[in-house]
Length: 189
Image (cartoon, one colour):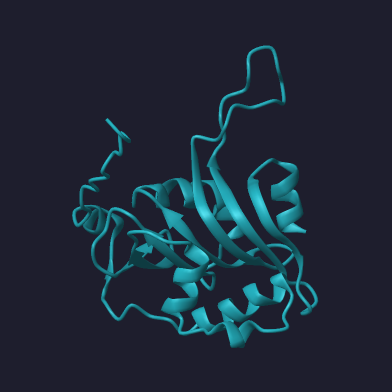
């Protein structure tokens, strides 16, 4: 299966869910999805340093061969390029792509490499909870389901989601990014 291959390649990290849904041939993952692996450690041909880029708190539904739904958090909008470059073979024009992005302040639709991305501003919180809120899913909608089937329920709701804006090119979307000012806490003085 596709997710098993990704896992064997070390591309799935901080895994909270990985397994088959009750719908045969559909597999779910929740965790971090690697966009760029860390360098090999000195003297090793397998052991790597931590990844340079990941999709944080990713939610993925896949078939045996392709990704059906992908969501998660990008800190920077330009990381979409890394995502598409890394996973292009597993993506189709029908893949539902819904991401939260820290350095945008308005909803956007992005057309890139034959794919359509629904993009939402992110300030704080757990992506899973943000996703449920955005898709108007209540905890009762997920009650009694396995963790894998919950991902399927989220996908079913996300299929019809639309930010209701015109699609932008990546270049046009990058012109609309903002500078994120994160306050650094120095603790007690």
